[in-house]
Amino acid sequence: MENAFRRRWKLVAGLALLAMLYWPAMFVATHLPIRTTPVGDPYSIDKLEHLTAFAALAALLNALAAAIGLRSWNHSAAIVCFIAVYAMLDEATQLSPRTPEVLDWLADVIGATLGVGLYSLIARFWFVTSRAERPAE
Image (cartoon, rainbow, N blue to C red; front, side):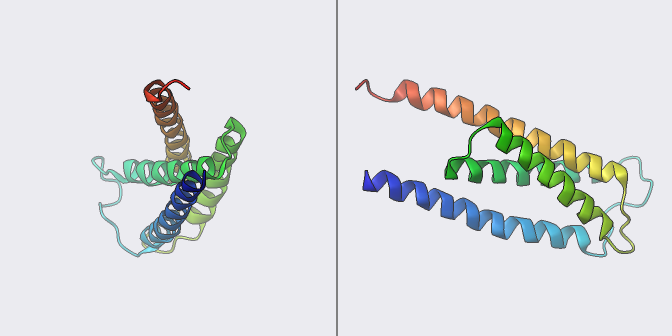
């Protein structure tokens, strides 16, 4: 029993550390005064970058919540709502040459929703698979 408890808290600590490294790095990256693609470039991957970064953040926060024991859909919805508010603040605090955009915020929220959804699918598959492999008691 002690071994399972220790493993669980190692997972929680690892996920918390990863979140504490990823989130500030993402914040700094969204506020650096660089522009990776020219304004108005139709081939810009800006929205895909927003979607991916916030999907990863949402999946990471959802994994951390689940490791702590918060596994209901309410917690996942709260994570998406929290990220939506954070993304709004993130967009609003960007300085020139970066500009706050509603479409960037929308990409952030869609990314958070996809991240939570993807995490839920993987977690459900993992649970079913690990349960099937567990020996009968």
